Amino acid sequence: MNRNIVITGGTGFLGGSLINTFKEDDILYNLGRNRNESCKNIYWNLRDSMENIEMPFDVDTIIHCASIVGDCNSNIRDYIDINVGATLELLEYSRKTGVKQFIYISTGGVYGFESNPFKEEEQCNPHGIYSLSKYFSEKLCMEYQNKIKITIIRVFFPYGKGQKGRLISNLIHKILKGEKVILNNEGMPLINPINIVDLCNLINGVVEKRLEGIFNACGDEIVSIKELCQRISDKFGINNVQYEFNNIECKNMLGDNKKIKDKLNYSMKVKLLDNI
Image (tube, rainbow, N blue to C red):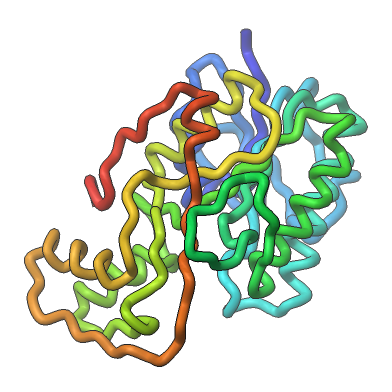
């Protein structure tokens, strides 16, 4: 059966990758300011109301990927207007039109930092405006859980083909250019990144099985930032990476991925930094 699936940010790193993973009989729509030539497109500035947006009839699933990322390049107000405001617009649209499932792409950053891997039921302690905006949006989503099937996916350090301006892509850029890499004390924190291939497979599985609730999406392999740099330099045959250490003590940002893997009977397909 054909399903109308709307993906916000369908020209971004995750949204663009997702569009290429769904079944051929699904009807995909990119909702945002830019066009994706691989699917249908609906123009929407995320700052604006959805009142006059011409959406397809009978939307099955909305996957909300679009947001301002990071904590550096935008006005603080933008994180609220776009990350939180757009989420509310989409939730209200979903409630009014009978959308069957709303999938919100959040971040593992909502947990904060701790020594051990975070499980989904643990208390959140977000730091920085980006993680805070994601946390506020999660709270909005939960207000609608009795009206729509709500799924929240907390993603930990996604990476892969086509990514720019995030942790792993930035480290690769610096190492290839011979630039100095600045690390926290002892090269921490520990992280477990997820490849975009596995992340898209998991989201696809959530759509297929109509999973509800909160799920971590992270890889199996745990590395420190310094070890990650070393593995990048080894992969590209680069010696003598320049490091500078500050005095910042930092706990880990690790996710426990058992819940989503068990629900989907899924095993990670891509080892850390494969196909980089």
